[in-house]
Length: 152
Ligand SMILES: [Zn+2]
Ligand SMILES: [Zn+2]
Image (cartoon, rainbow, N blue to C red; front, top):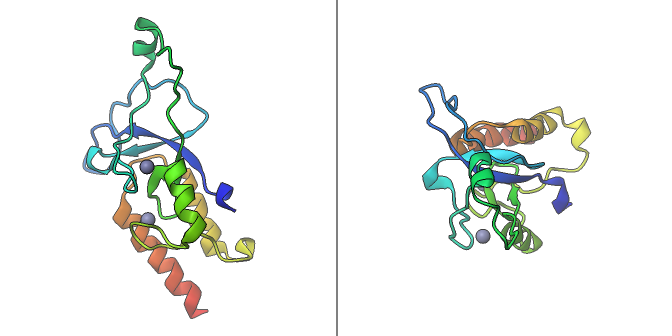
């Protein structure tokens, strides 16, 4: 069940214009993981309070031989609400908890997701999101969805 939640990597948010569109993306090395852009003040794991490390850029990789320890950045786990933590920290939390550590949003989709178009739409939105995570927007959205779901 935990593995339904996407693994992502952190990249620093580029300068954003007033509409929230990222300008001037970094030249990050390729990754299979989806990029999640976070503003600097959000770019840490709130479990262990360590800042996320940005990936190396292509230019730094060709100039400097990539680090000999070969340490890839640990993939991050993104919860449905959009919050991102170290995979290790996030998964450990999920063993004993059903709500996001930060915003108390549900970590799990209700049963029979397919029959709940509102929930699957939300899930797609979280997965498809490739701009800066705007926590308030996500939380508001989640609450709206929950509200309409309970009203049925
Ligand atoms: Zn952590
Ligand atoms: Zn959250």
